[in-house]
Image 1 (tube, rainbow, N blue to C red):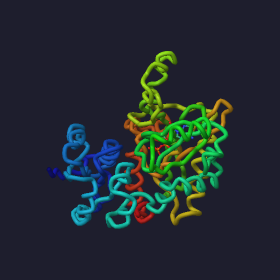
Image 2 (cartoon, protein in one colour):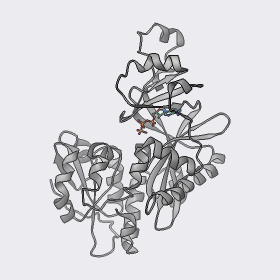
Image 3 (cartoon, rainbow, N blue to C red):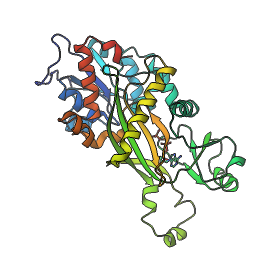
Length: 351
Ligand code: ATP
């Protein structure tokens, strides 16, 4: 299906009409909608059978069907002929793989080099702590466990199988269920989760707050609906919490936390410039736990658009304050590309 139509509201500089392309998954609806709102043509690369949302919501001018997301590697020539700019998201990183990023010679919005730091838990910890973030304590050996911990597996895909342990004995008991899996042991922070969404513009050198969300995770968010008495009679293993993400819920943070969140985002960007050329730019997210003592722990960074921005297709309270027009993170990306074209600084936002 090919419907070439540049959005009527297009105010792109004359003669340059790149198309925005992304994989049909994760946050593609808002990326494509935002691109159309900014006047770009859009392409969704969909796995056969998963294309319905992109047709139904009319966000894609063109849909390319593939058997596997990795087949994007075969589309290089076609995408370059269409003058496409690729917008990455978690599904792209997960299914196409970091090792293929460099190989695909299609203009890419964002900094590829930072993904190596984001995806390696050790490097991530070094980056975040150097940026002044409070990172949960890591335990290299089970014998060191002296407080509640969360055990995370590598390549888990959304928290599946993660478990809590209160001491070494508890850990050794529970890890038996996961033989041969590599893991990290991290201090479990008791508080509430808050995912802070940012956008760093290399054009203005400003780090904007885009919004906040909390995740809806199965089954941990369902366990609280069962009384302790009923939990006790459930079969062994049924009430062990798992953290499989199934949705996102919008949150507005207490206003007095905002100065700290803004500073954290700025410091993470500043530090990223010391570790990779160009540094982190575009959308990113700090995954936090806020404690009753008002401490903010950061347990992970996502150096790209997160699905937690999906509730804000029409903009968040924060983007409304700043833009006075609906501004999703997807649209903010397209706006950055458009400004870069107008200022002849496209090289500053593409990799
Ligand atoms: P993703 O890459 O999608 O963010 P992941 O597999 O890397 O997921 P994490 O985000 O690290 O997993 O953790 C999954 C969930 O576990 C979090 O959303 C949160 O609920 C919980 N969690 C992780 N680390 C901690 C921690 N140190 N203290 C308390 N809860 C945590």
